[in-house]
Length: 457
Image 1 (cartoon, rainbow, N blue to C red):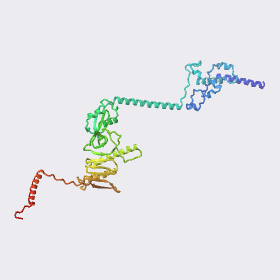
Image 2 (tube, rainbow, N blue to C red; image 1 turned 90 degrees about the vertical axis):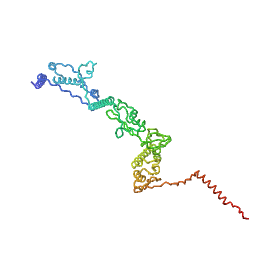
Image 3 (cartoon, rainbow, N blue to C red; image 1 turned 90 degrees about the horizontal axis):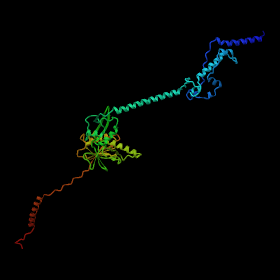
Image 4 (cartoon, one colour; image 1 turned 180 degrees about the vertical axis):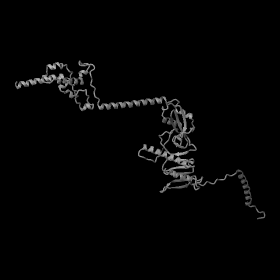
């Protein structure tokens, strides 16, 4: 046997051995298909996995064929043994390729199998679940948090509304002084009048009215109450704090005389000057109301700021502050009861009249406490070196030295001598004097009249 025949026998034996080997060996498991790599856009959620992409459109024909449903092949034992592959691959490799195609088709269902209208649709076919990206998870969490906060706020709002409308009702009223003492000093009014003007009834909602608005309304309707403050006290009490107003100043305006309280509240108006009140000389804004129950603001004409609007508010607050400070200091040194008039027409020349006889000049409001202390010692004659109760004139305490001390000067008023009264004659005495005068004249005439001499020639 030559070498060529021997080599052909060996080749035919190797082919038969390779064809018969799969019968004795166990079948191999199909290899799992490796999913294609996804791009960056699909990972961050910009591109959905199930959406068609350019990579799938340009995929090779072999991958599309593997995605198609598998065809029925002849049995491995009979056909593969009887008819070997022309390309030379074994039946095991062919079976492994079929397993791969089946696994690929099961992992990636085609569009036709997912469409119920297509012929390839099978009920219960596995559907691929889209992967949720991290950005979508964060968006879902944010929406859940916002929804939870909104639900909590809605529940709280509903609870507050129900509590206010159903639980908090007005059950009691209390009128007291500003220092919370009772019984309250309501002045010329009674507690029943105040509660009637309040306009709140038992059973009303405790938070159904504005306490600030009620306070302003009561102050306008009750002029002789300098302070009216409405408050609420849980669980259902309405508290009204009052302080009666005192008639302190009388001020002349174009509409007549106004009676003012310590806080410059208009108490009433009169056609003539009221008695027993301090005459207040100051400048008023003609645009502000002057009706009973309203408050007045004083102006300073000497102040000239840049703008007129800021000038009014600044000057008014400054003059009102100076007046309040002056009243408090006068009361501190026991001079307020004897003050007749106060002049604030010029804040550089503040002065007041005491007991209608001594005009005290303070000048500016600087060191007002020091100036009034010296003035009280001189006017009230505290140490015996001051003014007498009959002295009249001008006391100037507005001069201040460089060391801070105050120099006071008293200028007495010029007194005019009283004229001598002419005596009034008495009628009886005049008649007697007239009779005596006639007799004396007759006597004088008899005496002066020369008598003729009988013996004379």
